[in-house]
Length: 440
Image (cartoon, rainbow, N blue to C red; front, side, top):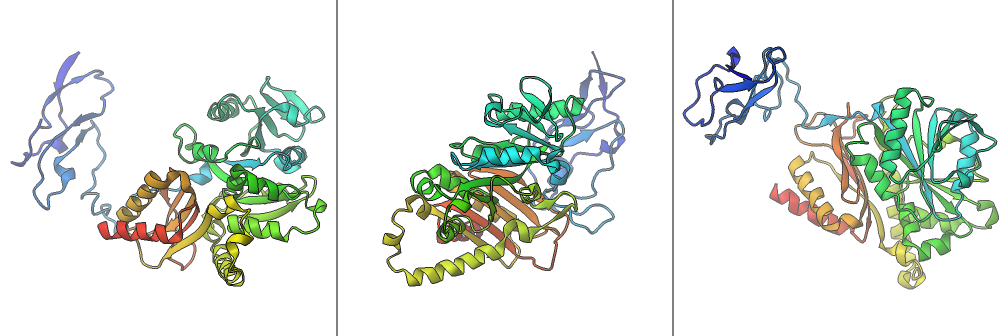
């Protein structure tokens, strides 16, 4: 190994008096004379007021270097352009395979729904991850079994069983697709067990570096048994949470119940933003199950109005207020809804652009102190010095990295954030925001 001296002419500059450390002409080891590696020389100076830290901090040396920015990123202006640079990565969700979760309590009709979906022509470009083959009848649908875990069905749908770890199963499925061992697929459905909490699976898709760069969370579908839902919601918090996290609520066995108005109202109170559909014997157009994510992959545009469903939250808040006036004895009237009473859904809107440091501090405090009670957060932010909206999405303490959308879809520039919580009130969230805003 021989030593040589960096000859990058663009780095030959006199050091300022306050700079301390190795100059750019320092000697370093070159492992490969044919393929020069990236070499970094660090300084640890103290910066006088007004001095750009980039110009005297990290120096990066290439044999054929890119032209550096003409100014510090703090000003966020590219050379020759007046367009601000965003602090956030652009949204790439349209490039990733969408994953939808099918959850629901025991006996609510998930298996019946899956059996119908597997027969549907619209599912031919889909992969379905199930718990066990024995629960879903495949014998009359099977065309080819790739191995003990993956099967190709007559409709073209790929069906595989969950291994001990869902992350491993999803990664293996992607590898098989890239190798051509299974037909190509454009979406994935994951079935959960009746007692399963869908939050960990959603978190896996939101912010797991081995998964979230290739897959994205699309829709959480929850099946609700119209016959037994009232009892299940009363006794099991897991059933309540499955409803609260859903994007689609499919009411099954509605034909066996004379009146479901009370159930509809209860579901809307738990999750005003979810779309409610009725399903008979698992029959439903697959198109109604998908497409709940912010960005439409076909149009590659953001549908903020559909994603947040602001009108549903506003309408429910008004109805709940009127309902409270008519039932002063509400505690006694809803005494059996012990789990429901702790679930709160609301939206907070800001007319003026927000400071990102204040928003980041606010959400970080919520995650750190009340993460278990922060069931789901979805929001569109209008931030200072950002030309386009920034989307945030989280479940409990796990959030997807904020992403900048391509453009505002309309003239509405308000920041809007939807909260679904367990015991965290609207007033408490606003108080925390005021503290974070004052400290910014």
